[in-house]
Image (cartoon, rainbow, N blue to C red; front, side):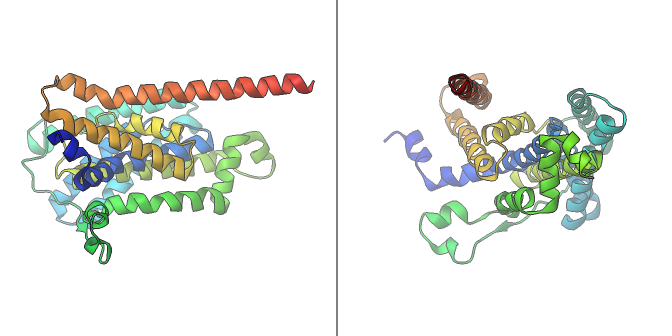
Length: 313
């Protein structure tokens, strides 16, 4: 068997897929929350950048993972609240506001990176902390299974835990009911006493929190430093993952797994004599193909419903 194939069909590859999937799953859940409330958050790329940078800087200056976690989450939640402010109070178009926040995040993190380190590339010159890995007590001793699921960063396990928690929050709690009610019909929700703007604010802040976890994992789990524009489009791929998953917990986890698989494959074939530009293009190409297939299926389903309604009348 070719060395590349043997490495792909291995426990190491499966382990890497879960690792690469993590910074996609977090923001995908954030996108889903904002989609369900009817105010899509496309600023998650910027939110991840700000949180990733904040976590590294705070951990470097305080030497505390706890403070780094709090600061990174606070930064993400604040960015979500800023988006809500521009959208709900200033009545700005949420897409334009999100683009502006994303550009602001890119510029601000680069400026502060140079201010703190004198380097516009990365914080590699600073001593920063990383979140620990966790060996699952019983699973780690099981052949194959232990090699795949044990020994990941704690944030990877948190991302997997967030999947059922997302389902519970959205479908089993009063807040989730209000979020979905506002997203489906804000006027009807308002008529029964729901404060639409407040629920949208909560949802966008929650979306920012999910994005913050993704950013923190990138700079303090996936690697141990912050680098300029390190999100590399993951916030936008997360939008595709949430869309393909139908904004449902299981669907989001499966679509994030798919994109994680594709990204891992792109990393593994980098050793071949293939142009690097082609390898870098693979995840985005698959994203476009997946969205095109989803759009065609949705249009076909819509046409079928239209034909059924015509037959009825």
